[in-house]
Length: 174
Length: 174
DNA sequence: TTGCTCCTCACGTCACGTGAGGTGGC
DNA sequence: TTGCTCCTCACGTCACGTGAGGTGGC
Image (cartoon, rainbow over all chains, first blue to last red; front, side):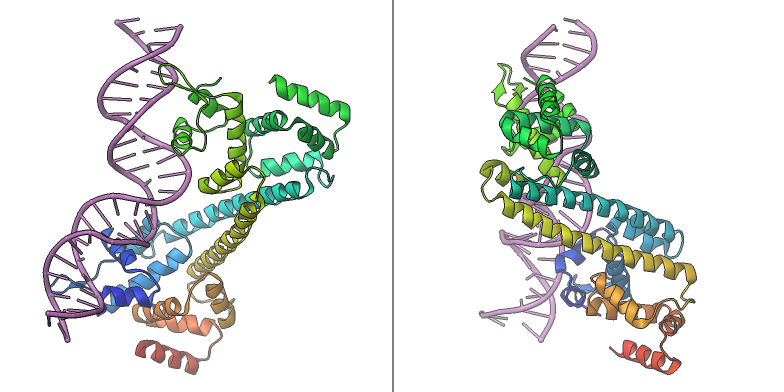
């Protein structure tokens, strides 16, 4: 039999985490003392070990509730759902990485390098999840706040002087 | 001049998001009508475009506030901090991926394959962020709930019959 | 007058963290 | 009696979403 603080320490959790799990029926101590103190059995401890493993996999407490309740039935589906959502989350973070990397590069060279062309740039922003509207708006802002830098930027994408002027006019018009 | 709903739609946001940004001073409309309606100028729109780009990079609204206020000074540090935290987040999710993949594999073959050895298994769990205590607890749980499966599992890691018995005794003792 | 948009609270979300105020055990 | 652990509310976090109840504009 373990006290709440003992069990928490054994798993590197906080006391309030165990209080939370109790409140939502994920892990309730099998015994309460006369003075209402929580007493956790070895079985409770085992259940917590499983719970922690599922948490390591980033599953929501709701899903973990299902897994602990079902115990062997259709658990595969829940795990596979999480595996898929993980893939999406990772791709999203990677898109954020490239966007940030590009922002830093751009700041460093002040728009004066030519290491990236238009197609690459657009693909990058699109990969970062930026939609048409946001990109248009971003161009308009750039044109308004720093028209010369915008022109330099367009040239840096390998666009000709003349075409750059056209694009800027369209940007202002829309 | 744009109404709140107009601006929201233009950027694919909800009205309540703009209300939220206003409340925390990230983007306040430069004009209010007599009837207290928000009116956003082109400058406000430009600011929102920048804000959205930073959000695409997964920056917190607090950091975005700093970036919008500083405008050119020391912004690099904030962006680099985020780039680093992104690396950690991605590694964590990848660890979750391998843990989940392993759990699914294990479920599929019911502990009867031999495709993974002890070192690999421990390294995998450790990579998934599992600490000593959690691993010990997990072994104890396994031993208690399904001793035979635990034995099979240990054998599947390439451990000898005799050594498996020792480990199980230690597990029960601790 | 009828819809439509807008306004301001205020409360809910997720997985806890952080006190406040009080009681039990050695 | 003194610390220590425990208890139960209740409110805060982050970035909004979702009504409730009311008002302005065409």
